[in-house]
Length: 254
Image 1 (cartoon, rainbow, N blue to C red):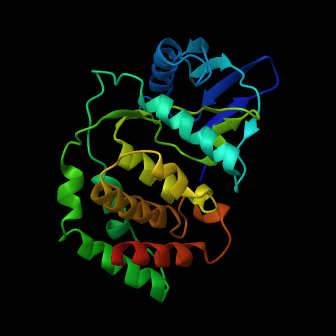
Image 2: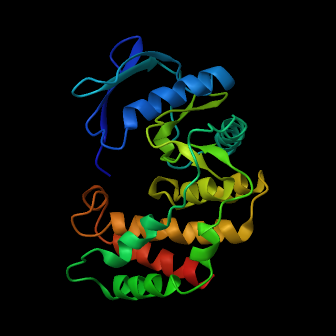
């Protein structure tokens, strides 16, 4: 996917400059960093300074020790990731950030143009259109019983492993969410294809129906991202969209 920011790691602190900020990304990240520093110090970078009204805006934060998780994290890393998620989800949810559903992300697949689609993509898009007549959209439109502070960007490179614990970075998309949605986002993220998501999932009590429905939704979104000219298409090898279409069909059939 195309980068939404530039990160300067050359100094003792990290300077993050935003390439786009129409959705309030800098202010959101700055607010969440303060919130986490207050309620779960050490889980994320500590806020240092911010130029939120700049053009472009920027946020400076402390630098975390360690390196991003690789594509195939081992058992210690997965256990530490689970602990980090549990800590994040224990943080109070901000009252000013009301929950809202994610259905618009699934709608993008069925409304977007797709020139010369393969047979796998045609079948997957047809199945995605039929999905809207089933029970999943109704379920996902209902406010969850359990709400958490969601990271919402579970690229494995956003989890920093120092050999002992995992810390989390990149909160520009963070907002109120729920455990099933957060696990679905992780399970369906393209970077996590070699992650044993079942180990992470087993550590939490979640609504299995909601988790299954959310995984379908985010698989649809990823197929949309992989469309010709899409933000994820040019960063992945040929055939990735067809693989994603088949993955979506498997999820819809399950």
